[in-house]
Length: 114
Image (cartoon, rainbow, N blue to C red; front, side, top):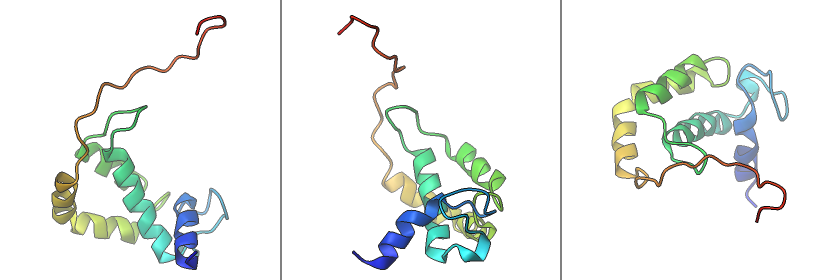
């Protein structure tokens, strides 16, 4: 497998401030590809419907990313995202998820109930 793909797959878990996992890297020690993917992955995750959550609204997702600027995410990557927000909005609208079925509360099965 391509070493860059392996590297990118590992890096989004590295908080920019170094106070996390998996390798404890910090700031510029995190490869740029990993820093970019971390921001893109977080935005995509927040805006996407999952079986356990509804999609966030765009404003709330951006506020979250700005709050995590310098802590979890590279400040420069957040700045570039905000600089190109109109283009990102257009892309997000073009590829938006279909309206989802309601999110159900998940409860563990009770003993003896199938």
